[in-house]
Structure formats: C-alpha cells, structure tokens
Length: 312
Image 1 (cartoon, rainbow, N blue to C red):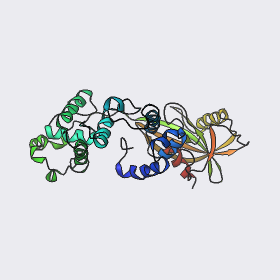
Image 2 (image 1 turned 30 degrees about the vertical axis):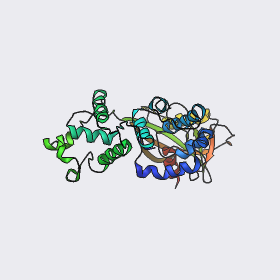
Image 3 (image 1 turned 120 degrees about the vertical axis):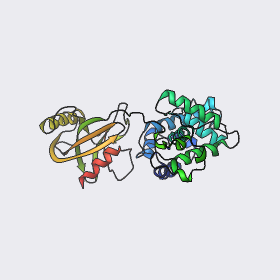
Image 4 (image 1 turned 120 degrees about the horizontal axis):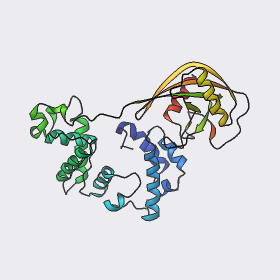
C-alpha cells in the first residue's frame, strides 16, 4: 500500500484489509473482486492484483510462509528491488538497501550528486550509494530512518536543514544548492481526455458497468464513452447512446450541463454528464449492475464515486 500512497492515507485501508484478510491463506482463497473492494480508493489497482497473486504463490510454492531470501522473494508478482529491500530488511533483518524517493533525495543531497531515480543512470548511482551504506546490524531500522529523514526533514521544498542530524556532512548544503538536488527530470506530458457518461439511477443505486482492458479492469463505474476530438452536445449524445445500446441499455439521454474533472496518472479527464432515463428494463448481465455507491459491495472507481455524488 505504501508504494504509491501516503502513510496517513494507507493506515485505515491497511486495518480494514487485515480485518478482511487476517492471514495469507485467507487472502489466497479470496475472490479477486473481494480484494479489489477492500483496495478501492487506494488507486493503482495492479498492486492489489499482484498482492493477491503473490499470496497464492506463497501458499502454493512456499507452504504459506513468505520467503526471506531475496532470490525467491524477488520472484513474487509486483515485487521489485525496492520492495525486496524494504520487506526483507525490516521483516527478516537482511542487509539490503531500500531506495525510495525520500532516501534518494537524502543521498543525492548528502553526496552532492546530480542523480535522480527517474533516470536509469542516476538510479544505478543512487543504488550503489545506498548499498554501500546499509549496515549489517539492524538494516531495517537504518532504512526506515533514512525514509523518515527524507519525509520529515530533507523535504523536496523548504527542507529543515537546521534540524538535520547529518547536516554537517551534507555536500548540497555546503554548496548552498540544497533544492538543486536531486535534479528535476521532466515528467510525462499530461494527456487531456474528454468523456461523456450516463447517470442512470434507481433509488439510491446507479447503473454501472464493469471495466475491461488494461486500465482499471474489473472495477465499476457509470457507462461512458471517450469523445476524442469530437465536440460535446449532439455528438456526445449520439456516441453515448450507441455505447449504451451495445450494453443492451435503452435510455433517453438528457443533458445536465455539468462536467467534472478527474486526474489519473498522466491523464486529465473532462467528463460530460448526461442523465439517462430508462425506456426498457435493464436485464441482468455480468458486466452491468445496480450499485449503491455508499455501500462497498463492489469496487467502484474514484471517478465513478465522484460521478455518483453529482446526483445530489
């Protein structure tokens, strides 16, 4: 959960997750949809799928015991070098480095190296520094201390250098160029996307469709269609109506005049909202469901919850 989520945000999800899946055997036996429901709201749902797949492999191939050796732990789905170092150093006392964004910033400033985790060459340099520093005793404490140092004192902006326990050895501070390290690597350009969605309601429930494809597969949200460069209004109504008919839904579409904005990764999505008035009943299908957004019966996308809230 902490791979892409702040600690304060993750804690309630973590507690709820352990309540539902108290041990690795329970998680391994769970349905994928139940795991997604417990994860809903954290984003980056591939992490949940990988965690579920890893639990199944641990039960099947390792007798239900998480392997403590890097050569085996690193083969689990979703596990990379950082996760291997973090988990094995903290849980198994293995002398391995754990290099996240906070630790990389500390090391770049301490050594005054123009290296960034987002650049392959820079990442190799930072991993080399982290490996050289990790101690043989209490490596988990060391890794967590570096993470905390980066999160609390050696922050990206307005670092609290006067409180830093290693400030006297900091090369970036000596140069008077603290915020120049690590160098900023340009991020991927924002992709602007336009969508039209239909809000079809029945009491407190909203008609939702299960997504497929690579992005957010298995999660639920109101039916919609991407507009590309096409204009809204009549064009959006026609495209959305065709998408509904492909789902077997016949509904009259009424404009609401409302739009919402939603960001996921590098995509900035403008969503045009239409009200759908059913003309025929919706027959039960596996990929369609009436969903009460206030109940966590299925995993609803963050955009789906945001759209459902526009009814009020």
